[in-house]
Image (cartoon, rainbow, N blue to C red; front, top):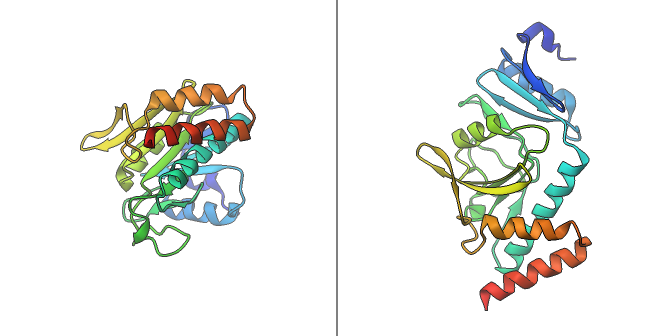
Length: 216
């Protein structure tokens, strides 16, 4: 069993469902991933000795599922090749950075990934990452995605989606998705608000109908 108390300094200030530890080695981080296994509930992120452990809430998982269905409907309606990786580990030992996003997709660069796993030593980072912040901020994760070269992040926080695009100085908020040029943050938020009063089938049908109307 990994003994974090023996390898890490005291925890940094934390929030409910989120713990930050400093002074954690990359080796300890990797050992913890192995010990917790692939079916763990907790999600981990690591950057330069800081280890973040978060526990998603039920509402968090519901929002992730809705956003995933929206992305998948977009790729189907637009006939775009895609590989979805959900909360796969994105690790770069050479950068000492790694994170487990809420969900992620390879779309523009999908042809460069041979299998159904992502190895950032040889594969490009996913084109789109989804992060849902309800009880825990994803500021550390955004720093990690910047280092890993993730071009686009959909970040849900303060009860709204914002679209972030990677630029030279970090992520900047933009109105429209770089991946789906006609999809704006305003439209995403409008449909997410509608989803609260709809069942999933009705919701995705209305979303698909909107996508088709943009292509007409």
